[in-house]
Length: 603
Image 1 (cartoon, rainbow, N blue to C red):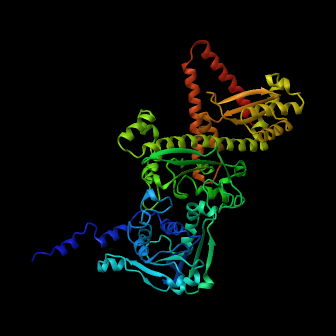
Image 2: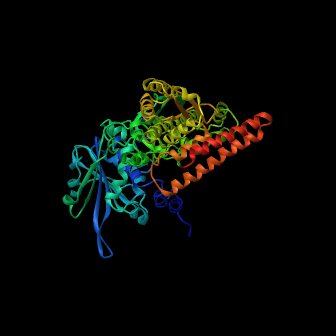
Image 3: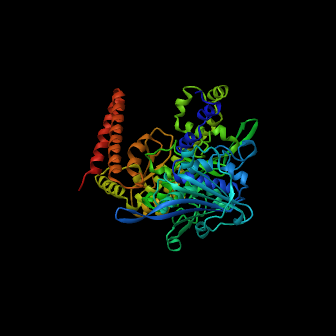
């Protein structure tokens, strides 16, 4: 018997509901925290001044023990609420009231947030929404078991229904209008307990909504409780801003930087004007650098604030004041000092297509793709302008982003250099507090002087200490070392009668170090821009942000490699010389070796 046209239509729907919903469960949310953020987005978009994440546990038996297990996740807000029609629409995939990018500038838009985030974590989502008091609440739901078992195709029509008393006991944001969303039959949360979910969501929520929290546009309460003992088990905390640029004064950063900014803004905001779809839109870049005081302490990376900064490494991609992603495409993962700079790119929703914003608002794909590519490979011998013109002809949306990526890359190189100098200054100061090598070298030099050997610097050893300090401080400050650090280093050198003073400075010279004999002291300036510095000095002196044997062993191995390369470079230098110049180099090597033997010999 031939099937009716109606049967055929049902069997061959373009998008069979039960199969589509099952597939949508795997829609790419990184974890439960990111899925919860979708609900907070909707609340903020609806004008909520307070949002609550309510996590209910129940006691279950596992083996011989009773344990608490996450049972329901709810998000409550005091926003504008929804009419029955809008409420029903909100649970449709891809539908909503904010789909036109030309008419919307807020953090919502895609019409996927509520249903997609919900089914990614649970099998049932219930929604109550009201606009004239809680008693007027309308309710509807999605239940995956119903959809899969009965072939349900439409969102149930909302009906007026009381909000369960349980949520009335734990929620504090029930106002004249608002919305309550409850996830039950939770089967995909990566954390088994309420405390686990809140602990792992706290930093993310604080970072994603930091601008709203900092400006007091919204407050976010996070609460856990056990349904069997609500009052006795309830724990709550309020989200604090988590600023990866560390420019905000009051954040979740541990003391002493919880009430003052740990970084300083570097430079001024860089604003790009991008023409897209016939209109000009601003894209703002902002950078920050750790304050000197934040890195003064030994092993500052192991401190609470250093560990906090370690969790915020990356370029913050912000859309309409809401962070999409902390992109790590340009991060040097091997270098723990990456935590000491911050970068932010802020753009409006009108550029979503250009940036490649995903419908779950977790990334800006087009920008991230460029960050992850090597720029030289991308250009492939062409000029930046040529590549941009070609991309324009090919309708490649990444073209206008190239200038941004190039600017970010160049700025990060500058910031990394400043961080290296900052660390070198700290090490220089510490070295002069101990001065082991300098003290030994001074003693060996005195022995050579007693043997009749003289140097240019020896003539000024009788100079008054005040004059010595003045001239030596001038040498260091002229090399870019801060007056405060220079004064301390010079004071230690002069007061202890040291003959040698080591400092680190940036230079475009091909020399690895320079020697400045003045005021009775030999100042040795190590060039922090020279490859030998990275290969030999920096790798040994680099701050041990987090001590482990493997890291220390790797540093020693790399330092030995650097020493071998340094000696190989000298050997090749001699090999390429001829005649008197070669003989002079060999003589210099021998004479230097004799003094080195004396300086390094143990008593």
